[in-house]
Length: 92
Image (tube, rainbow, N blue to C red; front, side, top):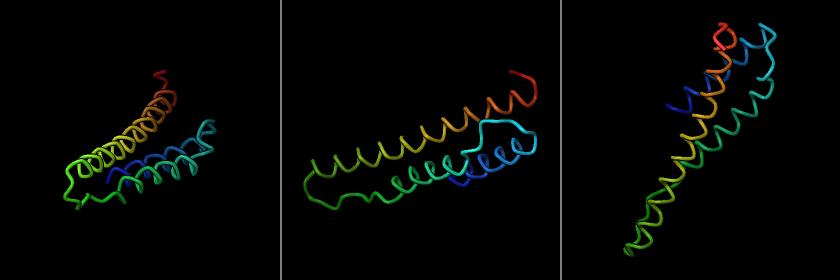
């Protein structure tokens, strides 16, 4: 759901900026591609079925880091959207 939300946010912001002639969102398709890559990497990681607890813990950490990278990536785009909205409304 997080990817779907950021996908719509980026798309709608890019369209709005295009209509209003505001620069900074011409690479929205590239931004979407990066967000999808982070989402896919997090989604594809599977839990370890190993009996070795070290392997299981290592895999849990990899999964946690992948999801955190996805969240951090989304937050970067949200900050950019918030700045754009503030500039459109005259708040910054």
